[in-house]
Length: 370
Image (tube, rainbow, N blue to C red; front, side):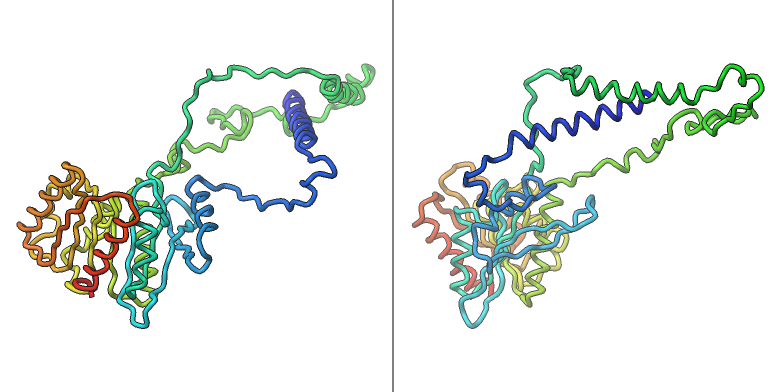
């Protein structure tokens, strides 16, 4: 009976709170809220998906490409936004996949957007794919102590509602109570709940002692959601983008990685680095930020006489970047990479420099990546 009281109290409080919220948020008559249509509600979206939806509203509809990416921990594929530009020449040169830096997006105003919009003038099909956030969920720090108990202010409505089930239960008990005269002669039926268990020495299950328990301690880790690391999720995005370009009929695909995007490009080609042909693939690294294994073992990564062309654009404005670029140049010389080209530029965010950088990439592609 106590469980019924608690359930009724919870339902009543939920209904009472909903009624107050509806009253407070209701727009007064005669305001602009009457003419506004109710927006479509989107449920279950994380920050990354909301950012993609916001970006999709800022670009032209003919640029949108929604890739289907299957994460191992999810049953349904995830929609990943990519922005494409078709070649503006009768003869297509190939496709360029653009990988942005961490915590950016496929239409980042510096370098990413000018590159994807300018290369189609040279006959290139560009596809800038959205990479996942490195930290998918960021919870704010808790400044308040943990609430130990909840307080409920009893109003007249709540008090009367709590008394109604008790009065009804008392009335039912009086009606069902047998008279004292017939107590000794009448048989009281035993319900299934009052059945006396027979002790046969067997252990009693949890279902027989109380409420049903539907917990499998052996499989407690199955319900735990496994979150993939950032690089594994990013590689799934890159593979989906490459498959899309191949589905469009492109056999000459160039990967352009900006900063940490260059590190992801090396992660992508690592499994098949020894099988990459001389034609049909090229790598462009712009101000690359590589992991130590790739930076210090540049020669071991590419092996001997890697044939595909590589363009390494170093940010010459920073001494550290110049030193790292010098290490990569030495590694390329040791590995005898045939078409490795390194260029040192003073990188800045001015529009004139971006156009100069894009022209340099475009001319290099026309010379070495066709």
